[in-house]
Length: 429
Image (cartoon, rainbow, N blue to C red; front, top):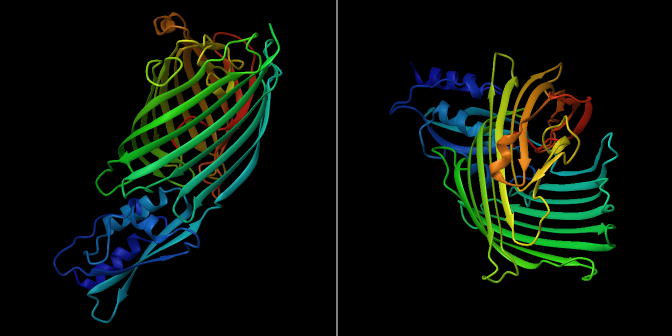
């Protein structure tokens, strides 16, 4: 096969939308070398962000498989609504080629209301603002303000503000930084009137080990510190827990691919947080949470897939007797009212089937959830609560990591149908 036909075949295989199924082009010593890599359409995104994900570079022999992988990894950044790749000859000798990536960027600033309500009178109103791809470096700043009425007899409407900043590969080509801060105020009305204020800050350094030809995937470990301050306005009415300083350890695994309207692959996450009253803290506390999520295509229809996963948690606090976890409504087990099941331990499993309707961005979904929460992990097996749901899930092309769902759910053990809706927290991201 002549060099001309190799280049032509490689170009046809790499037409927009076909890279995922590109087949190998045989490479030999006479194959052209990549003389130049060019990016088009990246008005905000810096070249270094995309080059970090690529398995090709200038000077190497042209390989259609490597180019297809690089195109997909750039798309898996989640910053673009489409990524195209093409190959051009350089000079008349055809001994070198130019690789061109053309991207179409998403909207990097999002601001939208966060509203939720149910038939039990519980409601929440707030605003979320998120800036993605800050400085063109894929940094993310997120700010969420919320006012919530949980319809609990002993308390009024609480107010919270949360801010977070994620800086991938800020410290090195493998090390990222995550910062967060939170402020919560809850007015209590029974048995006494007082305000509870909780402030929390956290800093975690994340080291990514990567996968072959996929530097942002694979295993990662995070190490950090978390500080928490608990105060009450009236010490005669309630006890202030004081301050705690915890060490944080995270161990995660990601092997996912962004298909614009869906994400497939698997992800595992674990987090351990520990504070000791003998080490700078006023009280002892510990918590552990783990989750596993997987989504895989099924059939020939694009973006038709199964999604399933499980999450679990355990917590212990030497002073706070209130439950650390709750299930019900959009917190898991959608067919039940919010906080139907509470405790210091929980587990939740789910399975969902999703298929696009007329548009790829809109999919109908049907699913099952099963789980329980209890004060002690030993009691988790005493009951199993199952909820079924059917709904519509919308994932707009231009927004980053944004997916909402609206539907109906009901408990299989009996009970009425409930409407649920909101931003998706389950599944791959």
